[in-house]
Amino acid sequence: MVQTRGLNHLGLAVADLDRTTAFFTDLLGWEESGRDPSYPRTAVSDGAVRLTLWQVDRELENEAFDRRKNIGLHHLALEVPTEADLNAVAEKLQQAEGVEIEFMPELVGAGPRRHMMCYEPGGIRVEFIWPGK
Image (cartoon, rainbow, N blue to C red; front, side):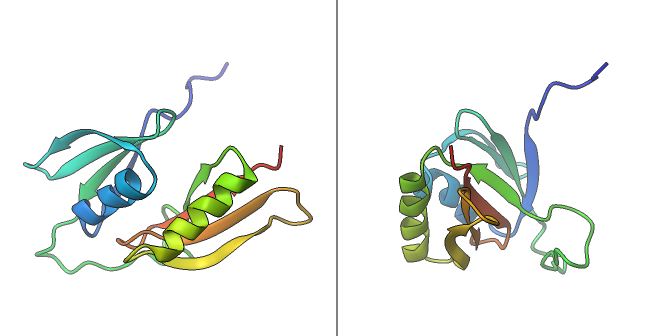
């Protein structure tokens, strides 16, 4: 018998809380649902997925995550409902300050699924995927 019921939230340690929050709220239209400046952290959601974003301590030496070397989050994959939505997100992100595009929309394998990859301003790798349905 399965003992869990899906993802409640995903906590991400981020380099710049305000810039990463803006990536999700301003660029993707997510809602910010809570902020705790004493930690600091914030929560954002698209209505289906909830993320908690935690500011790393800037007084400590921070090191960017290397997905080929470190154990941890390889990337965050977010589904979009249509191929047109994927293309619209890609165009918006391509113009956004601080967002690094790894690759623009392309087929996953033989398709019809399509996806793109980028790094949000704090360096977290984010995939946007249209399941091809």
